[in-house]
Amino acid sequence: LQAQQLGIDSVDPYQSHIALYRGLGYIVTWLLFMSLFDSDFRFRLVAGVITLTALAQVVFGMLNYYGETSVIGWMPTHYAVHRVTGTYVNRNFFANLLVMATGFSLVWLMARRRYEGYSPGLAPTGNGVPVSPVPMITAALVILGLLFGGVLLSGSRGGLLSATLAAVLLLVLMSTMKGIRVSWRPLGFLFVAIAAVFGFGLMQLRLGRLGADSIGRLEQWRSTMGMIDLRPWTGYGAGAYETAFRNRQSGDLGPLTYNHAHNDFLQLILEQGVVGLLLVAVVILIPVLNGLWRAFDSRSVRRRRWILASLYGVSAMLFHAMVDSPSTVPANIWIFIAILAVLASATTIEYRRDVKEASTSIGAE
Image 1 (cartoon, rainbow, N blue to C red):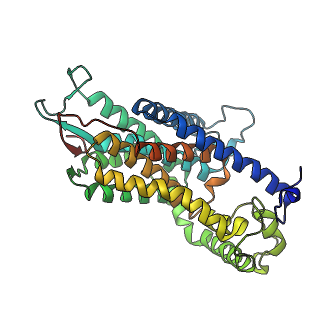
Image 2: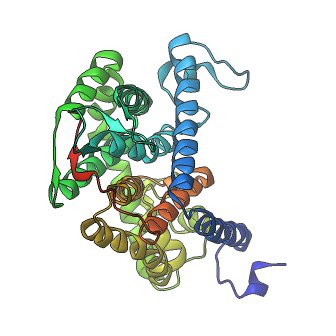
C-alpha cells in the first residue's frame, strides 16, 4: 500500500506512510485511554506509572552521571559523564518526559486538604482514622527533587523553560480559584534543596551559550516559515520535514539539514498545513478549556487536583513544543496522550463532596 494510493500529497511518500500509521496508533491509544480512565483509582494508577517511569529514567541517568561511566555497553562514555539523559540520546526529550511527570506530585504537594475536627497536619483515612501526611509529603518532595534535579543535570534549556512557565501558569490558576490559599513554603524549600544538592553549573553553562545557539535556531525557523508560505494550507506531507527542508533550505544555512524544526507548531504547519494545525488544536483545546471551566466550577478537591496536575503536564508539553520538537518521540507522545485523557476524564466522572472538606489549603502547613 503506497501513500499515493491513499490520496496523500507528500514530498516524501515513504515518511508520510509511516506517519499515517503512527497517527492511527495515537488515535487508538487516545480512545483506549479514554475508555479506561473512568475512576479516581485509575487516575492514581496512571499517575503512579508515569511518575515511576520518569523516576526510573532519572535514577538510570544519575548512575551514569555520578559514576562517570556507562552502565550499558552501547552508550558512549561522554554521554555518561557530561549530562543526565536516562535512556534517551537527546537531553531535551528526556527533560520533556520529566517535566510532564512532575505535575502529579507537584499538585498533590501544593493542593492538600484542610479538615475540620482534626489536628493540623492530620488527615482521615477512609475509615476516619487520622493519619499524618508527613511521610507522603516527604515522598512528594523527594520525587520532585529528583525530577527537577534530572532536568537541571540534563542541561536542557527547553526543559527548564517549560517547567518554569507551567509552574507559573499553575500558580496563577490556583491563586484565582475561590477557597484556595497559596503558600510558597514548599516550593521555596524544594528550590533551596535542589540548588544545594544538584547545583546549577551545567544549566548556567548551557544558558551562557543561548545567544550563540539562537542564531542557527532563528535562521532555521525563518527558513521554515518561508517554506510554509509556499504551501500554507495542506503542507508538504506528514513526516516530510527533513526532505522538504533539504530540498528548499535557505542558502544562508549552507549544507545543514534538520530532521525536525525545533518548533512543533511550525513543523506541524509545514507538514500538514493550517488545516492539520486546526485539527490538532481542536483535539487539545476542547479538554483543556473544559478542564479549566470545571476546575473553577467544581467543589471537589480531588477533581481540581487531577485537572490542575493534568493541565501542568499538557501546558509543559506545549511550552516545550515552542522551542523544540518533543512530539517526534513516540514515548513522550503516549505520556502526553495519557495525561490529556486524565484531564478529559476528570471533568466528567462524578465526585461526592467530602462533608469534612471545609476548604483547600495550598502548601504544607
